[in-house]
Image 1 (cartoon, rainbow, N blue to C red):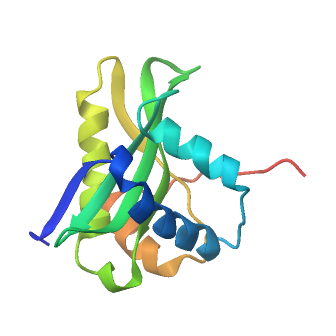
Image 2 (cartoon, rainbow, N blue to C red; image 1 turned 90 degrees about the horizontal axis):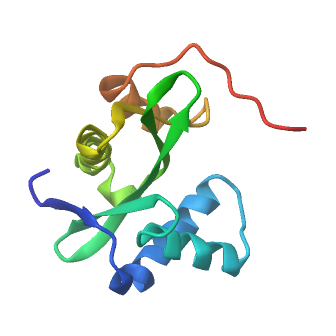
Length: 148
């Protein structure tokens, strides 16, 4: 795990980040227009409140996390939504996912006006990821709905 470096995403990461993003989308069986990916990458560089971190191993990007802070109707403090988390197949089990989540925890703790609360969603059948999530988070009793 010590050879994994977590750092903010940079403009020069685009070429290495995009194949990871496409693998993430493929896992969720989603295809997005290229302009959506372009907009996301711009946002991750500091526009519109999105944040991006990457996991690097031996100089190669092996994962990412995207998160954002938002207001809540139940608090004066900001909450942090961890929107996307991905590590390559060969990197799973090395601690990269844990380090990415812990980096978001640290960002939430350091953000002025934030509660430190971090939450995220995953598919119920994402068993491999849930093994990590069950160790590093608390399973919520809330059920998520989407507009039909």
